[in-house]
Image 1 (cartoon, rainbow, N blue to C red):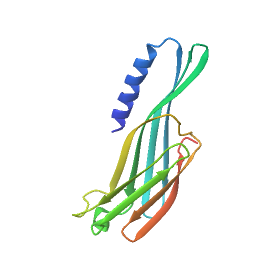
Image 2 (image 1 turned 90 degrees about the vertical axis):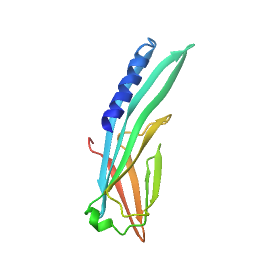
Image 3 (image 1 turned 45 degrees about the vertical axis):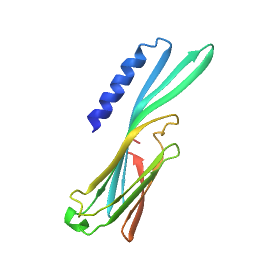
Image 4 (image 1 turned 90 degrees about the horizontal axis):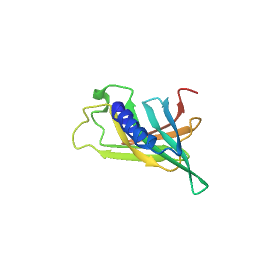
Length: 147
């Protein structure tokens, strides 16, 4: 999945490089953290584009992200799970996913991904995570592993 992100960003940069009046700054942040039962990773990468149009400075941000949570036990430990919800919240971005299981899960990692424009997640941010599974709940924070 990470290769898909890198390819997308590379293509975006090649397209933007054709615009001679723009300055492109690329970034990639990986936020990690864990609680007692779950660990998570948020990969956020993209480009800030500064330019000038009719004497006015312009700015845009284009990014791809992937959020993954992984149960710290074995798949056998969560065979009875019926509902799973997870939320993440940074100042500029956030998201959630919920899932109901008709059959026992066959994996301990769950994810969501996408792209965004506009406000940028900053490298020093702390991302709040909340995981609910059946009658249990856990909250923890992710920090940039490069900081």
